[in-house]
Length: 124
Image (cartoon, rainbow, N blue to C red):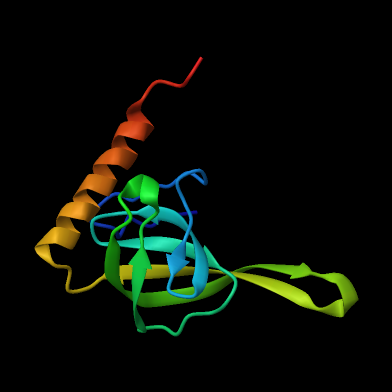
């Protein structure tokens, strides 16, 4: 089977569950990865594609609010819950839009923190 070439122009850095949290306004999300161009989140309510909103980075990554556009949303998991009701988990790709110089600096600092954490030797 042939492999497809990587379409991304910049690397995405995974975000550990310990650093993730908070969310987008009233929507609780888990930040899965972050890049200079956007992010991927996991959540339990669908987002409209091409919807503009703000992503609040976790406090461990600086806590900045960044304006984003949801460019794709997909169901990643379906669960059966008590009484026949089901739970659905979504993932969404976000693209940063119209960031101010201060927001861009906050994003750069958050990416530096993630990169340093990734390169740090494991704790004994």
